[in-house]
Image 1: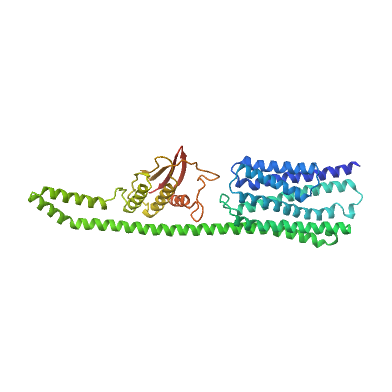
Image 2 (image 1 turned 180 degrees about the vertical axis):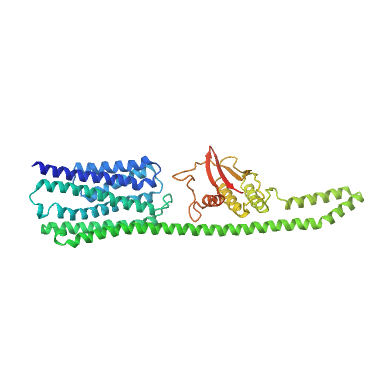
Amino acid sequence: MSLVERCWMITSKFSVIAILIITGICFGVFVYPYMKKKREAALVSIVYIGIMSVLYLIPQQIGNFSAYMLGVVAAFLVMYVQDRRNIYQKIFLAVTFFSIRWLAVAMAGRMDDFITKALVFGNTIAGRQWLQYVLYAGTRILDIVLCIVFLAVAIGLINKAYVYKNDEMSVKELVMLIIPSLVGVTGYGILQYYLNIYEKDTGKSLTDTYGFYGALSFVHYFISIIAILVMTTMFQNWKVAQEEQTGQELVLNQVSDMKKHIGEVEKLYQDIRSLRHDMGNHIQMLEHLVAENHMDDAAEYMEHLKKEWNEISPEIKTGSPVIDVILMEKLREAKEKQIRFISDFHYPGDTKLNAFDLSVILNNALNNCMENVSGENPYISLSSFRKNSIFMITIKNRYEGELNYKDSDLPETTKFGKEHGIGLHNIRRVARMYMGDISLEQENQEVVLSIMLQVE
């Protein structure tokens, strides 16, 4: 083997290994936003690169398609072992990368074939081996660059389109999302099959005989990647619309709750007005009983009045009748569930804070507490304080479990269905309307929700 032939062989092997490494790195970059920690995504890259390098350097009786499938399956298992949640999303990531890897590399290959045939094997430089080698090495570098560009663009666009990365993926959503990837990689397999069959039967290259075949293949690969991106975008837009609809339904429910609270307040005031209206008669009756020295009857009458007053007078007084009613309802609910309810909440009067907005915060927060409080001697504690323009609300509850944080500063919810994770996001939405924010922390077996609002 001559020196130039050896250089051709080394360059060819180097370019294949370089593409293996690049695709492995791209795999890690692709899954990184969905993983808990950076090292988990790095391990996905390392395992994929290691397996593919071994399969390439130690040739086995296995085709390229099967070899790359083994590499992707191994990478999927690494993701699953590190984090067993959201398995359908991990399947989506593995299948999607398997598809875009073949499609992107095939697109680069088609462009590279055209340039190589035009420059390296053209008649004008026939017989000039070293010039051919230099041009060949240049096309290998170009092929690597094109692979990087196509993979990076495809991965970047898909990750950008996939907004709700922390949401649990269902089987139906998985099927919908992977169909374009399966169609794309199946089309690639069919095109390669006929390419190989033609070459085997005729001894000629199909792309040389029919030049448009290469162009049509490139168009198919490109459209397949676009289809994956479009489906991902449509899916995320559907998720946005679904969340907005859920939010609207929740707001309607909160409006309904507010109407109920307002009705309770009106009933309370009506009872107070009625009692005040009758107060003169009650006083006259007491005076008459005392004047006639019917002290036992007067005491009994007084006890009856005190009982009636206690029934209409709220146990919790915050300075806002609407908030009083909300907290009284939560107090009654807590008593029914044998939960200790402690309130030291005071409504900041003469501020821009709207009672409706505050009711959204308290309803969502206290509902979450009622649903999640656990352990011996369960309790819910509500307090507030104001310093200048800052109004702080602190809600605590006993919780024996452990909050599960991912990439967000808010923990992942344990609820599924329509109201999945809406409560905390609604609280944050209202807080940000008042130039504030929220934080949720766990200290031992106590969960502490802090809400900051600017009320001036």
